[in-house]
Length: 519
Image 1 (cartoon, one colour):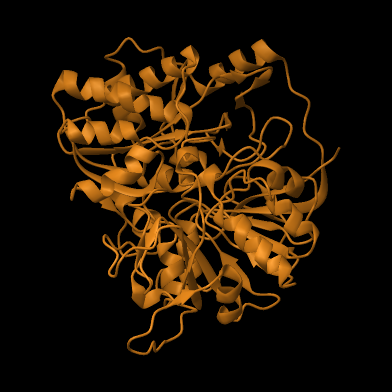
Image 2: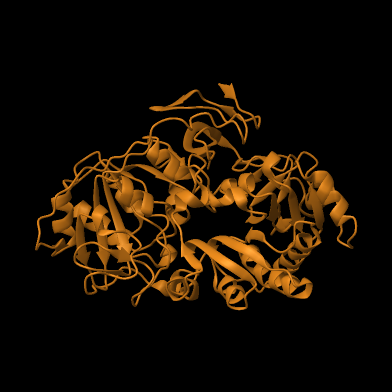
């Protein structure tokens, strides 16, 4: 066993996976290695197109075989239909032992991904999160191979480092032409930015675009170019764009959550860095999204304008842009139908590659220039470590998303969460799963008070700025004590020795592992 920099004991080897322990947020050492790609050269003859009659025909043409790796994007979130359609065909073709490597697994049903694990179609998974039925099954020990979970910025790093090599990428596009140019920005089922699939298009051996809206050549705007696409398939429906805002990307009406969101906006507005040209990201969590509206009010009140907003984008951000409170919106994912369509309507709303958003191994990413990052969490402990994956009984509740990337990249990272959920404390002595290291967290905001991290580089600055406000400040230990007094001390979660998930940090080192829950 080896101990990493957040004090987690890790096995040195899990199956074929060799563990490299997390050493710290700035300890990345591999940035000089050459970029690797699985893409091959192609030669499409003049006067031909790439249209296939069906998904089955495209899969056969791609040469997909047992043991290969397939990928998808999650821009449709819970409204995705592409994953199910493709896996049904793969099952029909009796292709087995595949590595399933989407950008994330949301709670897709009918069919469930679990069914394809049980029948041997899928035998390994790499993603940023595995919510819902699949997550529950994995944490109960469904798979022989551990699932590898990576933050959003770590996925393109792993692909370019050769740690994740994609054989066939399936890209759901809301519009495409017969030569492979495609986008998520227009069409009856516009899903918005295709930022999570751009690295797949650049790196996969074969790329199959699946659309329900075939347009005249050339498709405009172009999110993914024809030069990377092998085949195009038209189906009846690729997804339901109205469900993009379901699940994690939802608005809240809960008074407690709104109070936390309001206090978060006040923390930002009290900082000396809240001035013309600041930048921010509010994320997909319910509290984080609500914070956007309160922040807009603060910006109006103090006549402050932002240079750019980053990440997953909501209609509230688009409204701020229309009111000229934000100069540029850099969008790697769209969290609702309004945001999905806005990119094609305004040149200052940019569709960006997820790699330029958060990849630590690129020559500069947007997060390096971010002032404030607002993050959700399931648990925070007294060392400010954050859990965004597992719930109070060990169940899989979320995904890593961009949380660890934002916490490390933003000048001031702010975690928002209620002090308790039901009868379970959210501020704990030690998180069940460490996803984001505490040293990258600046502030924790709850309804019971606000805690500043003494180990954060900007602690003294924040302490001075917030001392001029009426905000209720508490130590993280006080918040933990309040939470425990309200709920009692929770029973520890019992696990077996079997590692079911490996949690990587943004540089590919292992920050924690998740073991099978004892039932």
